[in-house]
Amino acid sequence: MRRLVVAPLVLLICVALVMISPVVVVAAAVVDLFVPGNWRAVRMVLFGTIFVFMEAAGLVALFVLWVRFGFGVRVETARAQDVHYRLMTVYLMLMYRAVGRLFGLRIHIERRQAPRPGPVLVFSRHAGPGNSLMLIGTMMIAFNRRPRIVMLAKLQWDPLFDTMFNRLPNRFISHDKGKSDHYVAAIGDLAANLGDQDAFVLFPEGRDFTQRLRLRAIEYLRAKGFDRHADRAQSMLHVLPPRHRGPLAAITRAPEADVVFVAHSVLEELGTLKEVWRRIPISHSIDARYWRIPADEVPRSEEDVIEWLYSWWEQIDEWVEEHKVPERSVARSPGRESS
Image 1 (cartoon, rainbow, N blue to C red):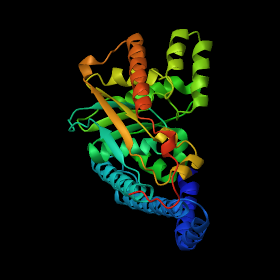
Image 2: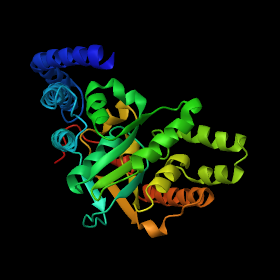
Image 3: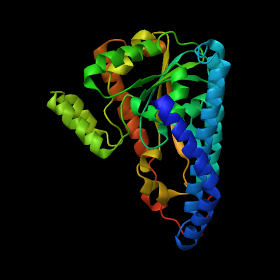
Image 4: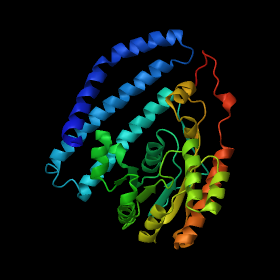
């Protein structure tokens, strides 16, 4: 249904939206004349137009590639995957430029090191809109990596993501407890046989960070009798407690891989459309930090992996606390423009 019904419908809607976008941009400009801010409505409309145009263009490109590779018969060959990774890189690069130009978004990688070959398992915190695309784009553009991503199944309702990511070695999972063993096994399979430029990507928290989910996770740990872990989760104010089964499955199936932990700032401040609106254009760069742990320093037993993940998540929580954006920096004078 997604491929035969939703995708053509979304394509038609995107084309229609692009066609009427000039009228909407003019209307947004009129709104901005009476609303304080730095042309926020125009920026939002322009970004929305670029987004739907890229959605439509991506769907057309994927259909052309489907035909090119034998109407889907050869779509999983190495050649086809190379082409799809290049398409994905171009898409992310263009979206990055649009977000940078319209919203002033910049990414600063703290203590950035030169890329080194070798398989890696990437475990990142999960907070704020665009977190996944930011991380994937950084790895593909800045570090020349080919990601294998574990994502929530609901993302497949976006036809572009559904088609592109299902043609590449990725896995979509849900929070169905009845299928948790199946999903853990799928995570392990995805992490197996990584090449020198491959990067397995997993978000051990499982969901975008919110204070409500944080408190719920702490209550769950206490209800299960994991009081010590609940106490540690209570002390972490900016992250959810990490789930260990997925990382353990990946570590077990990829013993030769280094592990990379990722922290980032700012995006947790943009949890709602209201917050995004208030902060346009964004004056602070997104700070990110990558820690690469050699494979021979990665623990292997379940108990050691749990302890290790909690220790790293405590370190990530401290890093986020140190890089929080001061609330006073949110306020802007109506006429001030950000570079």
